[in-house]
Length: 133
Picture (cartoon, helix red, strand yellow):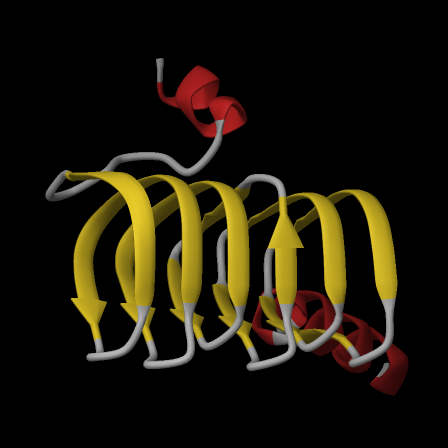
């Protein structure tokens, strides 16, 4: 009886969990998730999530990032597809192509990218597009 309630609770809260890539960590490959991510280390590959992504000052992504919202203090080299709001802090460095709903840039951020802003981007991955069709 009690274990059933615990199982239901843990399953429903899985999308709210914070995933963390710590400083000094290097990950090569593709990451897919539903929850939020905080990146302090290095990701060489792609990250796709329906949650928010925070890239700390020491965080680096070399690859593709697809997410709901992003707050960047570190470096991204590659393609960014942010459904809602992309916030670039003063220490952020962006090189690549950006598609976002809204863009906020603090003075000092380095934004070397082509950018397309689209209100109401409907999906963040090809799988979502297939489901809606």
